[in-house]
Amino acid sequence: MWEYSEKVKDYFFNPKNSGVLEDADGVGDVGAISCGDALRLMIKVEPVSQVITEAKFQTFGCGSAIASSSALTELIIGKTIEQAMQISNQDIADFLGGLPPEKMHCSVMGYEALQAAVANYRGEEWVDDHEEGALICKCFGVDEGMIERTIRANTLTAVEEITNFTKAGGSCATCAEGIEAVLERVNAQMVEEGILATQEAFVPGAVPVLAKPKKVVVKPTESKAPLTTLQKIRLIEETIEAIRPSLQRDGGDCELIDVEGNRVIVKLTGACVGCHLSGATIEGVQARLVEAVGVPLLVIPAAPVH
Image (cartoon, rainbow, N blue to C red; front, top):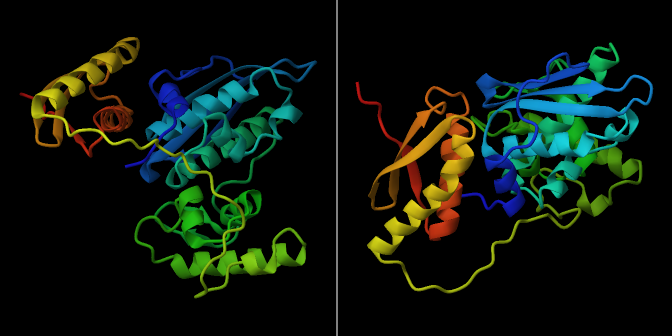
């Protein structure tokens, strides 16, 4: 289970600037629903000052994808196009108080959506049709160009990091050798350019040396007496009650049906029924419950009654 910062959870349950921006000046689409994550970023730009006056997003993905998209809009509103283009995926993660390493690809998706939206505003063609170089990861459609950009932008030196940032290799893993080859080549170039120490560069089969301290969201630990079953159920009820207002604002709702051991059965209603983000909603509810109860829980949507 991922450990999320309070800001990530807030931006997931109370996303800023979600929805459609009518008459947008620039639109950027990245990802694909078939890959599990997709983001559309829409911006309005004041033509003389080049200031981004409005930004909205639509995201299909997990809670951290929604939080990253929302954070991105907050970061770029009020900035000029040139200033916005200086924002990196790490800036998005930092704005949220950090992301779990395995979810850094959500910040990369936000960064690429911004590049695509600005290119669209400028009437340019943004080159991210996954045809840059060889297609490395067929499962998630990640090409060599995207991997190389992400390695350089984030000083990556391990295959696991590339999976965390791009999802490449995160499914069948048959592309592991291809990822290693790109990482070895790009790290060698970075050493030659003086931007990476030789001992930090990736060498196949060698024990990796981390190039920099990794940002980890640390959850404070404290010893607590185990909850009784009644206490656990009451805590689950209270947590779901605290979540419901944010869902109700969007016309949805969530109802606790039953608790069976560590399985929490809930029923989504209203606008949540059939919503393409219902999976992310379940994931977010589960994250909140795990944090509140302090034990692993599995949230399961109740089967519809016909």
